[in-house]
Image (cartoon, rainbow, N blue to C red; front, side, top):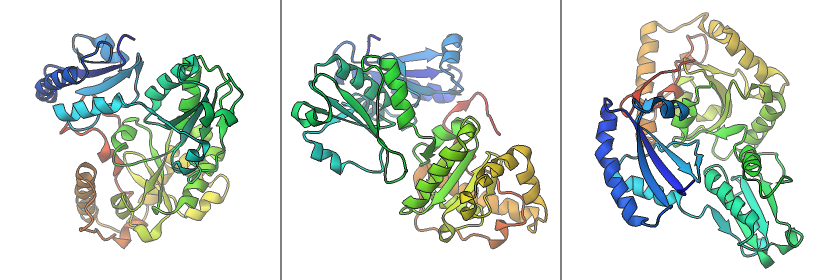
Length: 391
């Protein structure tokens, strides 16, 4: 690729959100050009999807406007979903162009790294090695998924033979039972190294936050979610381990997630639960939410898998609906009230002063609560949506 970073606006002339964005994007292009005048650094471009239908299809555009970035010729899987202002775009580009790798000066520095982050550690002789150039390009493309660290010369010589760089994956040991792993492939093969690092840095079980919820929802797979207390690392570790051992073959069908139960209090209330009931597991199918009966059953082999099978077969829905004790009007009012609160929390942040009390009748014998996480998908107040997948 001739440019280190390409920032693309996929739009349609008939889309009002695209028309609102157009002058802002043009203003941002001028600011970014002034900030980074050197050729080959960064360029902004726009694609009229009605005229360039093949390009729109290749980039999987399903809403307007969609903002994507290409780094070193590689499309980033993450879209820009932040504020639409020229200053915000400039700050975003600055962040994208920052060096993705932090250098450590001694092995002791590695003892202070965040144990809740997934890390890639590079041990090299010199910065001008061709292997390091490949490593840096991969880090540039995957810096949202992992933290990258590197040591040169004396800082790393105890970790590798002279002239033979080593790259090591260090897992988020505070949140998983995984172990360190050394890369054994070709260090001058960009694609091979990228695939290995991507597999290590994008775990089977991910954390959902208000920052990545829109992206995860747009993937279109139902959520199997562990809601946990912020300080409960053991439940997270055990859940991840059980998913990896028992449900690996379901990864094409389900998104396995963890969620801070304090931040995501409203889905808990919608299930008739509160922070006092954590940890707990639930499914959000994007139509309804279903509660896993007992968290401790997770440790019984086959129980979580059966929970998913009951979702696929429709058994979960049939089981929950039987014996409903709430009137349709009561259910509708509760759902509307919680929907409004949860939507406001996602877009503007949690409201710590206004606590919603759970209705004890909603926890059993009712129609299944409607999906709450579906509301975190792309909003019709921000995008023109071309299609709407609902499971």
